[in-house]
Length: 135
Image (cartoon, rainbow, N blue to C red; front, side):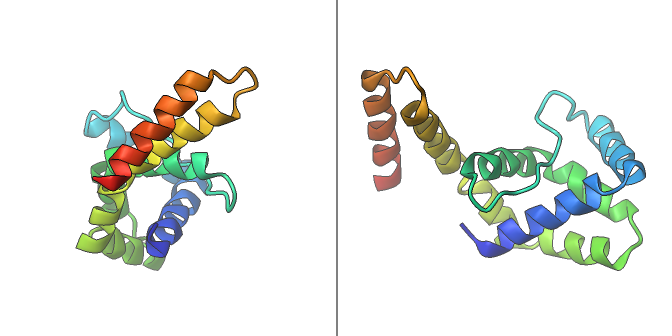
């Protein structure tokens, strides 16, 4: 995963969730773009919990138009720099490309970690992930 993607995702979280006023403005952007039926709340990224990264990646992928609209409304230097970064091709590609891979890896990881593991389902999840990665 691109280090910049992790860095900028965390900066988005800090900017949006760090102030109730900014959080309300972000929610307003989601409502204006009718993105109320998707995951919306950015998560703090953990160094060890890849499930949190997977969730955040999905949120950023689905809500990027609202994130950009929100950043456009902000006047701070951090918001302007973040807006420039998230609109770059590298960032947009990095958000879109690994989403499916992370989702499949997360499903596989969760299947392997359940206390009452279904071995057939776990094997199927690992095979599906392996097939996807090989393509």
